[in-house]
Amino acid sequence: MTEPATVNLTKAAPMVSLDKHGVTSGFIKVNLNWTSPQAAARHAAGDARGLFGRIRASLRSATARTVDLDLGCMIRCTDGTKTVVQALGNAFGAVDRFPYVALDADDRTGSRAVGENLVINLDHQAEFQKLLLFVYIYEGSGEFRGLDAVVTLTSDRGDRFRVVLDECPPQAHACAIALIKRQKGELVVGREVRWFTPQDGPGVQDVISRAYRLGMKWTPRRK
Image (cartoon, rainbow, N blue to C red; front, top):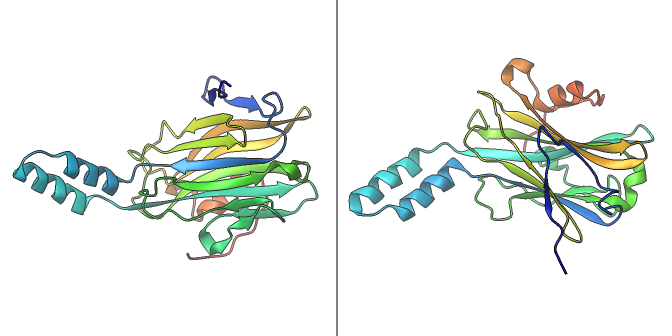
């Protein structure tokens, strides 16, 4: 049996209908993966040849910037209920009860092979009005450039929808990745890749929520 092809959501082709792909129930996994500068430097140290090459690479690894990217999902339901699933505030959610979206873990270094994953229970899609996938830098480096961040949505049967977080401006510390919503009776995924910088205002989640008119209220939280 031929595996479903990967659909790349790009600026030229930013939207895909899950209904047209037969993805109407079950779970869909949203994976965030990126290359930590420290992990990249350690890899270079392992590949370096000769004593002095390894020493130089090890020094680069020791001074490489650390970064903690956090994947999240802002949820607006058809009844007006609003919530967020994210590591901040331990709001990891649940797939078998409201909000029917859950985060599996908090990858604080970029070295976790499976990255960070959100799971969305499409059996309850009638309750969703909008699902906004987003990512931001919680701690460490002040920008995304050089992290090679990629987000992939995968259905139970293997359909893959991929979003590359490219064209990152300087100092960008957050990104609205994709918006999942009903459009003309179909559940669609639309590529956003909308970047936010400190100049957009304080409070990453608040800035993103206001940009998409989600009407959420935020209070300070720590992990």
